[in-house]
Image (cartoon, rainbow, N blue to C red; front, side, top):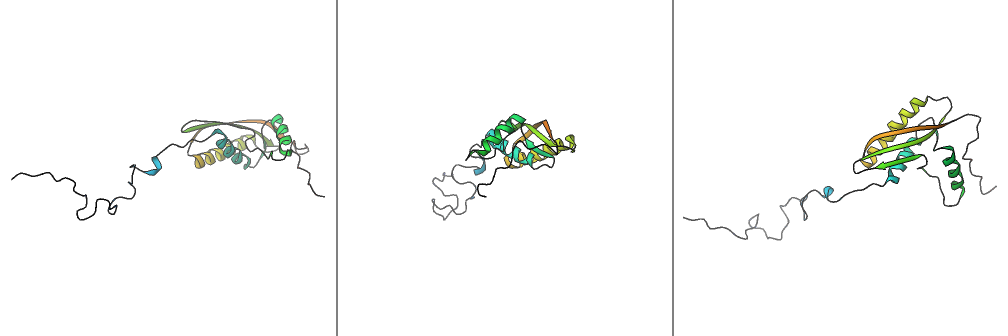
Length: 163
């Protein structure tokens, strides 16, 4: 007795060949998990915004950026449509799976600079890694100034339009 090969035999006998019932819904056309199809790239500016917001949330951080960049930023903030730049004082280098950050901050007088720097690092690393999935390999912090209580801000509050 010889076996004859069965051709054009459906996987599930009794079902039409075009019927998708009984198939795994995750393995549709193209095969594999949909989350692995394609590539995601994250721009440097995206990481800079996330890091800037996270750094500003730390108590003791008065401002971001050097005196010159804060001065230009104050002028830019007054121009209609200029808006506040959350990336001021932040520089990011983004690779495929890692990022490195340089931050320039101004701290309030009386706070422990080492504690503020540690808190900024922790907050920035947590926010960037959570939101982007990138590994933060380093966060370099340069303290460019200390805001004294009697000093005027480089960024004055805008005057109200209506009086």
